[in-house]
Each structure stands twice: as C-alpha cells, then as structure tokens.
Length: 301
Image (cartoon, rainbow, N blue to C red; front, side, top):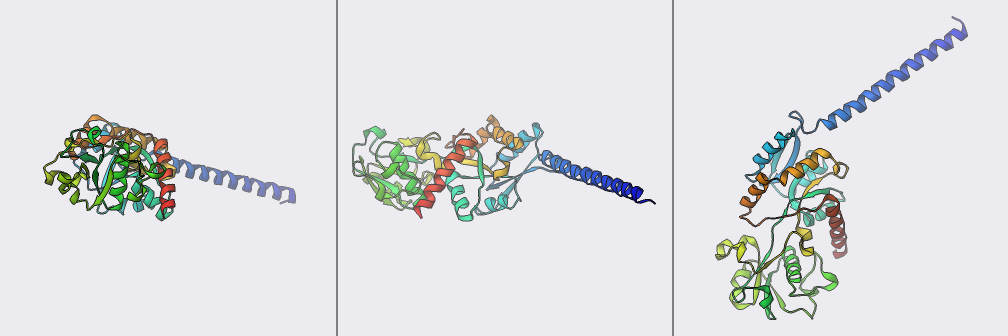
C-alpha cells in the first residue's frame, strides 16, 4: 500500500471512530434524557419522603396516578432522615418540615436543599380566660413557652397581634430579651405544659396545639393566631423540598399542584383537626424566605 493510500485509510478509520464515539455519546445523552423524562413512570416512580404518613397520602398517590404520575411514599422513622436521604439521592422529594427546620439542616450540613412549594402553616394561638378579643388586652402578663423554638415563634405571634415589639423586627431566633420596653404586655416564659395552667393568672397565654385537648380547649377558642400570610409565620411554612438542581422539574411542580386539590386538602384538614392554614407561596418566594432565615441563623450563632 502506498503512503498516500495508507494515510487515506487511517483517516477513514479515524473518521469512523469519531462517528462511532459521537453516536455513542449522543446515545448516552439520550439515555440520560429518557431516564430523566421517565421519572414518574410505574417502573421509576417519584419517591417522596415523609415522617408519619397521614391517611391522605394514598389519596394523593391515586390523584397523581390519574395525571399519569406514579409516586412512592416512603415513611421514614425520624426527622433527621429525609433531608439526608434527599441529599444522597435516595429520595426525589420530601415533605415533612417547615422552612426553619430546613434552614437548620442546610446551614449545619453545608447543603442547598430547596423549597419548591408551600403546603400549610399549623397556627400557634393566643388563648385567654379573661378576654374574648386580642384588642381587649391593654397591659399585664402574657405566658409563652420557654423552649427556644416555641419561644421565638410565640414572640412573633404576639408581635403580629400588636402586643409587643421586638428588636430589629424580630427573627425566628428572638428571645424574651429582644422584647422592647414600649411593648403593651410583659412576656413571661414558662414551661410549655404550664401555659394552659397559667391562664387564670395572666391576661393570655400562647399555647401549643399539643396541649389544647387535655386542657379542654379547641383551636377555634384562640383569640388570635398567626396565619399562613403573616410575616411572623414565614419560618413555619411547611414545604415541599427538592435538590437545588431539580427545583424546576415540571413533574415535581405538578405534584405540588396535586397537593392543593380538594381531596388532598380535605385530608390534611382532617389530619390536623381543622387547624391547617394552607399556604400558597411560590418556590421563588420560599427561597427568599429561606435565605433570610439561614442568614439569621448564622448571625445567631
């Protein structure tokens, strides 16, 4: 074979190899794309991590399947598992936490899990044996739970109600020492179990929902409670969460919308004894709230 023929032959082999590589690479890309687009099929369901699966989740699965999306609900045993499982790729989504909890995980773990939709706020109420309206309180003592998470939230509730003012507007990490002197009432931190027992002796108490039933109270007895739209309730909005790279996944967005349908919301209300206040903030709004909470958390350390 002449040198010219040899060079032509080698060029042809190289071109063929390049074409084969290109087709293989293209095939791999297509395979990845097909695998991604196939998420939600019967063989590749969307996996959702929850803690303590409520009775409405089978209804959610059925409603999703009607729209061609297969999901698998995984009920995990502890609150520290769903975020780690999502980060590690063992889950596609989780739905069990509020923004404050997610902020704590992201800051401590150095991760960037992202909220893609809101579910509900479970309001914290102000109760009174002496008053039937929050506007009737003109001074005196108000009892609040003294554990850090509930204390901060109780203070934000009282600020939303107009009874106190907090330094710098308050955060999810405020304490009784951030209550400003111009506040209408004096805040008295007590053990959470004592807030109900304190009712005869104070103008009002902020009482956790967990203690209402044993005290013969109902959520509807509250003279004030935070709402899903109140600024103070933002850290406590419960959320759908994905990995950051999946926040715009259209299938996941459809699942957030399915959660908002009437059959599911009826189930959520039943599971919460009617206390759930549904939230409708967008993923972008929730990301903004999360960023601020994470900054406040870092500043509090």
